Length: 135
Image 1 (cartoon, one colour):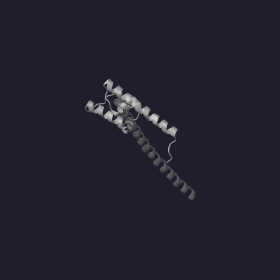
Image 2 (cartoon, rainbow, N blue to C red):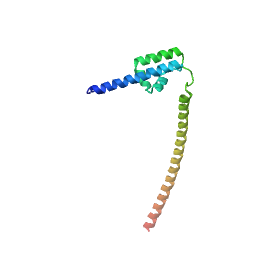
Image 3 (cartoon, helix red, strand yellow):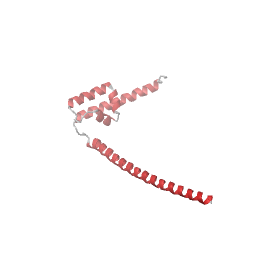
Image 4 (tube, rainbow, N blue to C red):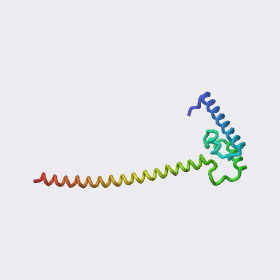
């Protein structure tokens, strides 16, 4: 693998630093506001991936420290707009998918039955034609 040119390495480093700064700012804002500090909430607030936060040792340590101070996580979702709407959307889409699958199964069964009937009629007509041509 060829090494990256200097200008690309510098751009990558600058982008990473800017992303880390956004994450630190989001972490500080959440802590000051008294909101729960989790990898998900920090990632959402900063506009970064939670994977980025997990891979950054400094940010990971800070987030884990804030989570430990806050105590055990509540059983329900903290953000009624985020968590429950996502679950509701998943449930709605799952129900819709189930209905579509059932409708497709019924249609396939109906089409198979129609095909069997058509093949039977075709076979009957061929037999009649064969008797007619034999005479």
